[in-house]
Length: 462
Ligand SMILES: *Cc1c(COP(=O)(O)O)cnc(C)c1O
Image (cartoon, rainbow, N blue to C red; front, top):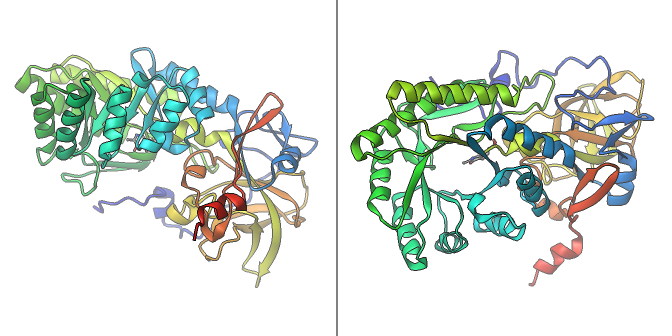
């Protein structure tokens, strides 16, 4: 069995070639409710987000622009808290999209915040997030970051290497605090969408391997340092996961370790963090499960395995990123050129591309897009929506049916761009990165300002 699943999931490993186009949708104007933000609808033909016509948003904020529906983010955050919150804790993985406004929204809905660098930690602290609800991750935290986290008295630090356990002990002693530590365990489970691989060894940079005994040793070392409080175990198995199979195997392996810790050290593992990775729908074929279904699945897996191992049940923590912000956001682009290539396909070029959404180029990710500035009853044409970068891999949407009367100046909207798009954005070809505009109840405000050429030139001090 291959160890490495296709990062974009099994849809791409099927018998159909990756390039095989989907069938055209019945109605090109329809907005699939699982894919578009909860408040999205068409009004007078044009797409409306948070009660605002996208033509007005484009006129005020320019394109490309990332339009984030605040109510959508808050409603998903609440769903996670309702599903897991009673005897557990939900942390928002801020790497999906890290801005002060969003961190405040999710904190108001009862979530903690995961950070994995000093930069993300600085955003969380400056947003006023309660430090006790911040978890610091990272496989190579800098000394300054450990120091910063210890000084801020963040709630949890997830240790990832033997060097770090020793360093953290040093910084804790120097600061006179006793940080709560989770040991990140590599279970040999790797999950994407419906597939997971469970292997004996695990060839990756994160965590302490269970199979080699490193995880047992890491717990021993944390317990041996009086400066550190051993809080529990952490496992993150992948991303864009649609079912609980991989979590079940991972939880089994981690709880087996918890049972050994209990037997060997008489220590109860108080917290079990099963990480993030809950999948969302990008295209109509993606059947992402409801959060409460996933949550009850995970909770019963943990309960039954603790019973089987004869250990007390730890508090369950999860860390969704994509699942909180992914579906909330739509990227608006303006169409520039339309090129029919020898009857093979039609290339629609927009005013952004891999600098604002690199996931298609990086992971062969699938997206959905619609004509947003008007409705159309023209017949469908199969297009490839591309950006304006000097790369032929600069693809935004690989296959998209758009109305054949599409023209320059029309606005396109690409759905589900809230996670890992702005946060992975670059200035390739010296394109300023787009702003992020929050919409709610008919009001819009920029929460991340659009970059300008002056911003870029200011960095060029040569
Ligand atoms: C990336 C990551 C997450 C969030 O993953 P999503 O797929 O966005 O839910 C959570 N925990 C850890 C440790 C991560 O690395």
